[in-house]
Length: 325
Image 1: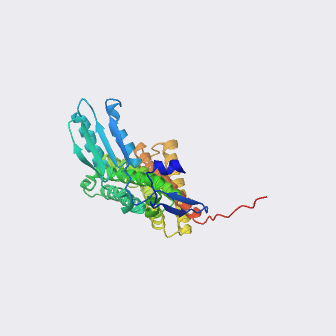
Image 2 (image 1 turned 45 degrees about the vertical axis):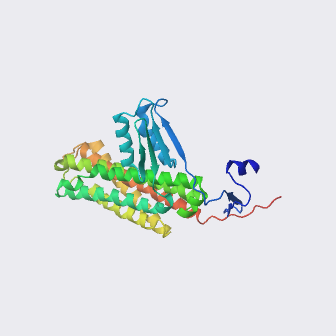
Image 3 (image 1 turned 90 degrees about the horizontal axis):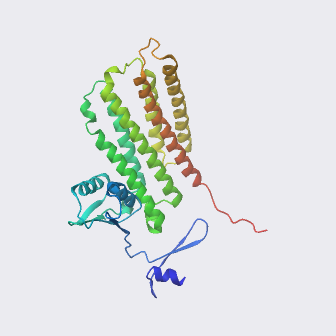
C-alpha cells in the first residue's frame, strides 16, 4: 500500500523482508537493515513528577530505546535520585547526556543478545538461593548470609522487567521475535513465567525476613511438616525449570501433582493452628505465616508449570485449511 511505503520511508529498490507465518500467510516487513529507535520524552512540567519512576519503568518495559526527562524549571536532586534508582533497577540503560534542565537516557543492551530463558534461569537461581540461605540461617548459620537480601530481590525484579521489555519488543518487531527464537504466543508465556518467578521472589524475601526476625521462636518440632513440604517445592520447581525446553511433559505433570499435595498438607497444618490455636504444641501465628509462605511458593510454581504446559501443547498444534462449503 502506498501509505505503508510512505510511512516507512521506502523507495524504489529498497529491500523488504518476507516471512511465512504458521497460518500460511505472508508477512512483509520494512528493510530490517535499518536501525529503528523508539523514543519518548517526559515533560515534568506537564506530568506529576512524583510518578517519575513509574513513567520511566513503563517506557522501559514497552521497549523504549531513548528517554528524555526534562523540566524547564531544572531537574531537582529528587528527580536525579529517581533516575539513578531507575538505572540501578533496570538492565542496559545509561545516561547519554546530563544537563541542568534535561537528562537523556539510552539503551545499550541489544534485546537479541540475551535469550529469555537466561533471565528465567537467573530468576530461579536467585529465588532458590534466598530460600536455601534462609533455611541455613534457621539451622544456625550466620545471618550475614542474607545481608544482600534486598539486592537479590531487586535483581529478580530487574530480570522480570527485562523479560517484559524483550517480549514487548518481540511483539513489535518480527526480526527480534525471530532472533529470540520464540513466536508471539511463546513470548507472552515467557512473560507469564517471569511474573510467577517474581512473585516467588517476593514470598522468598518475606520467608527470609520471618526467619531473620523470629528464628528463635520457630520451634523445630512445630515446623517439621512445613519444612518437608519446602523440600517438595524445591525439587518440583527444579524439575519444572529443567524441563522448560526438554519438553518432558510427564515430569512437569508429576511436579505439579506433588505441589498440589504439598499445598493440601500445608493447608491442613494451617487449619490446625486456626481451629485449635496452641493446642499444647507451642504453635502460633508465626508458624502459620512460616507455612503460608511455603504454600505461596508452591502455588506460584503450579502457575509456572501450567504456563509451561500451555507452551508445550501449543507446539503440537498444526494449522489446516478448513473446507469451504
